[in-house]
Image (cartoon, rainbow, N blue to C red):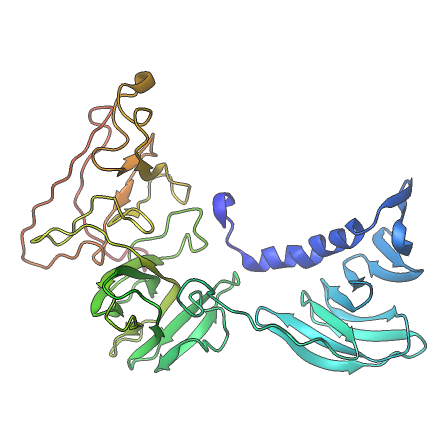
Length: 411
């Protein structure tokens, strides 16, 4: 995620257990002697190489061998166990008391067993790539994860495996894909939905609610996001996510939005619903609700002055220009005279009116940005007028194009 464009959370978490934790274990001490492959640290810690494997000792007890370890932490209050390849291993431990073994998951600790030392050693059987923690006797009380704290939405990223913050209708579950990314999945041929009551809104104030939605590529299923009496529907997902900084790039997740006015009681129901009658699976992620008052214009299907864009580029999505990359298009902000034409040879204004405009700078060849049916809804058989204000530094560098999506390569 971010500018590196990486999206594999499994690889990210594996790196924590395989490299970061052993490094942080050593970094808690200071080096007192370094003799080739043998390093002595404070705190009774020693690092060396045995049989070609990196090896750590703590108080004379081997605590790491190659990619397997049982590392004491926080003064021995707990021990972390990990094996990249899995299997059974035996380790020396201080004391004679029992340990409680827990599996570490993205939803907290899960008790596995009680382990009792024999002859000052314990034997552990690990699943490959699974991290564990051992506590003498039992673990302290775990603090529940407060998914979405401060956002106004409970579990907006659908990280709770049981989706406890949401009311479920039909078949609605948390889905974790092969890269470890979590989302909500709505499936089955009956109506499937997730909803929750949002509180604490200021009466009379305008808000934008949004969510990333993907209808199974190549299929259709009307999926509606609604809040505060407003609704928007996604029928098909045909616009690929080409933003490298998005953890869903390469998929067909795109954000759908509705803007509404908060009622007098400051409460509303936010709902994502997949209609009955289709076998297409629907995924949703990253739900947001923010105070926002974008401009409107009577008689228009879509109107955008880019003065109150909560996220993204208003009605536009990134096109295929440059493939999955960091776009060279953004919402530019007025900082006169530096952002305007004439300053230091600038040919055009960054901002055409007001305080913000959409700006593309030396973009890649291809479709720079595009609309989607849920950002600019149009009906068959109707004629529409499209108009916009623009400046371009080079004639013919950009063109306005019309088009439609159709199934290709099964998507």
